[in-house]
Structure formats: structure tokens, C-alpha cells
Amino acid sequence: MSQNLFLCSGTARPSARWLDAFPEGVCHEQAGLLASARPGDVVWVEAAHDDWLDRLGALVKRLPGCHLVVVSMTPDSTEALAALDRGARGYCHALAVPSMFRDVELVVRHGGLWVGPDLMARVVGAAGRALAPQAEVQPPSLSEREAEVAREVVNGLSNKEIAAKLGITERTVKAHMGAIFEKLGVRDRLQLVLRLSEHHDVSLPVH
Image (cartoon, rainbow, N blue to C red; front, side, top):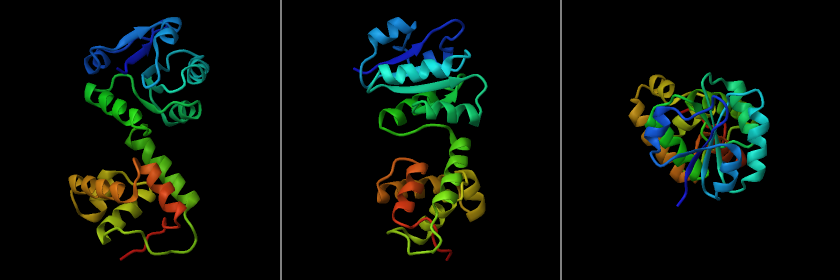
């Protein structure tokens, strides 16, 4: 059975909320973690020391098949991008609520990427601008409303911003997103942008 393992070092310790999320989670010093981790485990690393990036990179290499997640007491986009560049599959606040920790675990275990909605919107918007083709073409088999939602995702808008712009509820946006993901076979917003770009569908027509 897969585990949740927290890398303990100096002041880096799992929060009470992390422990609430994962009652069976284990805190290990690096040597113990390397000995205990198995493919499929989620390994949590805190950005608490100057050398945390080096430690993260070393763990990624030494723990193939594990899912590395970075937690930070002062999360910011620069730090998040650095973590992803070193091989992390997730990045979130060290004091996130238990339900969010469990959401992060679920996403990374299934091959997804978790960086939180604000950073994801920035990354998706940048990717959409960089990858969008010049000519507009017909979108894939999406409904008119789904195409509108997809276009705003490519523009980097969050679910809340899409709801406000299209005059619908955030719950409805989430429902459309679920349908879009299923129809296009993608797991997250970034994959959606890449999928549309691959098929030259990023510049969805305005109805």
C-alpha cells in the first residue's frame, strides 16, 4: 500500500493539518525516507532550508516512481516554478487544510500536476499565448458553451473569473470543465491548453 512520507530536517516538520489529512503519514529524516520509500509513495518536502531545491532534485533522482510534493510556509510563483523544474509534481501551502492536502495527493497519484489555481491560471495563460496558432479553426467536439469555457481557460482565467465573465455559476463552470476534460482526454488545465495547441484548436471561435 502506498504511503505519504514527509522529509523531516531541522525545523521542517509536518503540520497538524497534514497529520489530520494523513493519519498514517510518516515523518522521516532523509536516510530513513530513502530506505522506506517505494514507487507510488507521495513524498512531501518543505521549502524550509537554503538547500531544499538540491534536496528535492536528489530525491527525484533517487526515488523513481515516487511523487514529490513541495510545501511552503510562504508560497509564491517563482518558488513553485523552481520546484516543478526540479521534478516536483505538486506545490502548495504548508498550512493548507486537510482536504486540500488530500486533493493534492489524489491529483499527483493519478499523474496530474498541482500548483494551485492562481499559479495554474498564470501558467495556462502563458502557455496559451505562446502556443496559440495564428489562424482560427473549428474546435473539437465541444458544445458552444464548452468552447467558450475552454477559450477562457486558454486565456488564463480561473473558474471564478470565467463564471463572472460568462454570467454563469462557478459550479456550472466546473461541470463544463469536467465535460471538456472527458471529451478531450486530459487531466488538468495545462494539459487542456497543450491538447488544443497540438490540434491547432487553441484559438476557439467566438460565437
